[in-house]
Length: 160
Image (cartoon, rainbow, N blue to C red; front, side, top):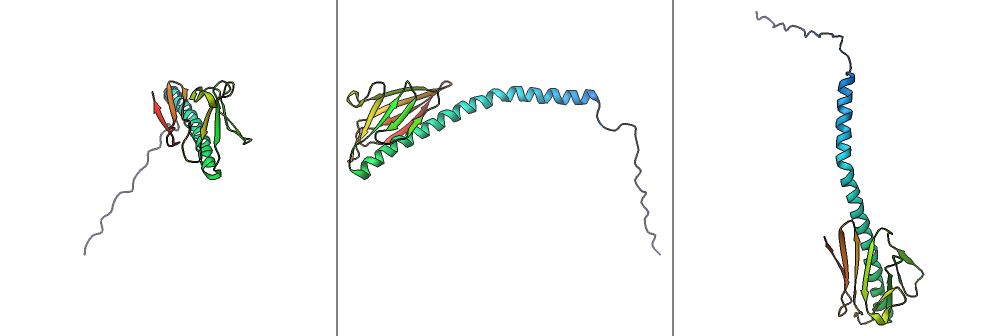
């Protein structure tokens, strides 16, 4: 007859050491503090980048809306950008786009289309425009929105 092997049962040692010491907890807190201190500036830079990206997208949308409006109605549509007040709007529409006050805004457009402090860009029913350029900057990063006069195309580029 075969013998059945008998394995010894594991024994657990009970020690008086339960939990963590104060020194261990302080070391962990110091490590967490260092990680937070190193990560905080990077989070801030991303927020500047996201503010710039969001405002660029909103302004591009406004300009493209003016172009589409001119094509649909068969009448010219004007978009205005006021770099001092950091606002933009389409003539005849009630909505005013307010850009972030932290942004640096520079705009170039046809002088004949401009009002007081606002630069005007006209979009025509045939797809053409008076053309122009808008630069938005924040935290050392700059985005340029170009409006091509021959096609009325609105496009943007990022530069350092």
